[in-house]
Image (cartoon, rainbow, N blue to C red; front, side):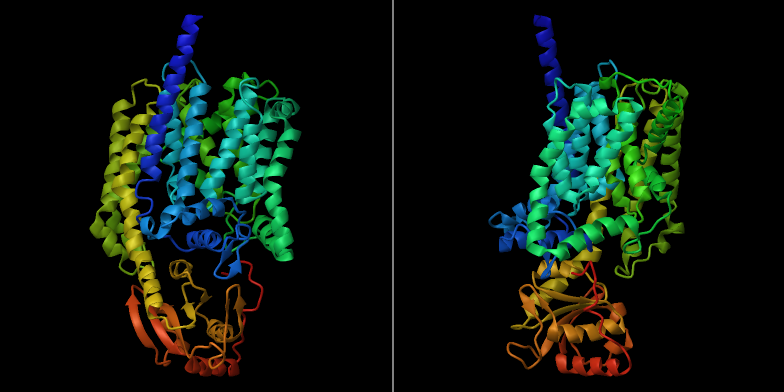
Length: 612
């Protein structure tokens, strides 16, 4: 009895050490220098602005951006960001507003790393003394995925969905593996949080995973009983439904049409914002999201397909040994649902990255007994690393194709930074380590190849973020500062051409955004006179509290249009490709009338589901 007690405490001590290691790695990857760069247009400033508005107005029910309600996502991510903006003195310790906006993504990603690691240590999939090492490998494979690195450090809701849904599915499997040792309600709480993060898609992905896995196990009904389906759905209803009901009562049909109609149903059934891709789109994303360890993922997928093909004589493992198969059906559920969806984005694959990390780390265990498959995956990883290294070292052949009109000197600055060469050396180091350790039988030896990738985070990834911020976002912050410093009382603010919501975020003022067409010019004239938003309304030039001038941010491409020339603006300042003008509204009105006579019509009142 004493030996069993000592073994239990030794195991618990090992788990704690493993979790502390994972926590430390997660903090340095996702929290280090999190607030040193500004928000990246276009979507993150919308999330950040809505969250800050909640903290400033006290309206924690309806997200609002630029004087308009934003029904893009449910409120959980806004609430978490808003808590950061509610801290007294926020501007002093978070001058760019990015700590508060990005911290939910970073911390939720770290939390999922811990759940992944804890699951691997608590439920080892084979008997060995290296469970902690494999747990660290799993967490790192997840954290170092190119998708997770990007979305774990930006102010959107995708990382939070990945974490809440991923935790839900892991706790569902743990409940199935150990019904007496795992509480039933924990997974349902995380499913509730996922529904409050992205809506009904969380229910669908969770349900598809359990459905596929249950059918494979020939125990679908039994699994539902173990998970306590009815009490679980009741818990989800109690936690997540009240906000939807209150928001429907407050906002009515616009909320119903926008959130459920446009952002859920229409995105699934039709192409939105030109994000239509072929059916095989997520096969490409699957491969990119797991680099450079994609070969290990592919052999795990192949092994699961081989097992399914043996139906009905397939091998069904004990519940506590079925994580390999569960991860496969988790990945398949995400792939099937979003492949059917008409609108496709790379970020839609993010909920599958935890499953991919499990499949990759478990590929070197006894789940795949064919040593030639493991050897093939290892060699192909080496080959890919060498290929990427050659590609990066030959950047002179392709770097000129990196053309971004918003950063005209990007190629020159990137070349001077030597970031591409550093990335090339990282892949060369991965290949060298792969060759050295290819013949050694070490459990969790993927950890050796992950060391250069962790180094690349500090040598390549973070400096790249800094470079992009300096070239792309700094001019927008400078333009925003110029607007605030130059603005006279009641002077309206306008942005023309490249519509960057960060201008709204950094000024914290209502901005009239329009494109660079002739219709946009006419729209500006009409909106300055007639538009109404929450906390702001357009006013005639000589009306009560009107303004004879307007401040306008315009990009170089828009300023070259003939209808924007000859307006005699006063140039307040030039910032990158952007200029800040002060325009006489009478001159603006005359040009707008001329365009109307030529047949140009105002279009700003036409329904636009994603206005800001």
